Amino acid sequence: QVQLVASGGGLVQTGGSLRLSCATSGIDFSVSVMGWYRQAPGKQREVVAEIAPGGEIKYTDSVKGRFTASKDDAKAMVYLQMNSLKPEDTAVYSCNVNIWGSKYWGQGTQVTVSS
Image (tube, rainbow, N blue to C red):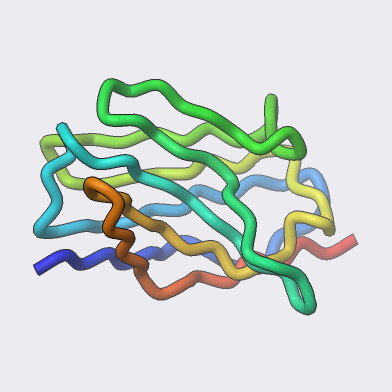
């Protein structure tokens, strides 16, 4: 059974940092695309970063140079290091896995960046 549990959100001032973690189970990282998504109030959910099985990482333009996604296959963990946070980064962040076209979601964690 696929499970994902995100944690690490919180309230931070502009310019601050947070590290999100996603604990997973039931996932074969060698065939799965791991992703971080976010949804701000009144906006559609958007992809923040995606990690391919081979390790290639893609970021949405607005977070390039500030956010770093990573995974630890042995620990079945996925991370999102967020630096230089801005108020527009405020959203509920969720981790996601895409296994051969089947998508699974974990519960989100709230990130709030104060100005």
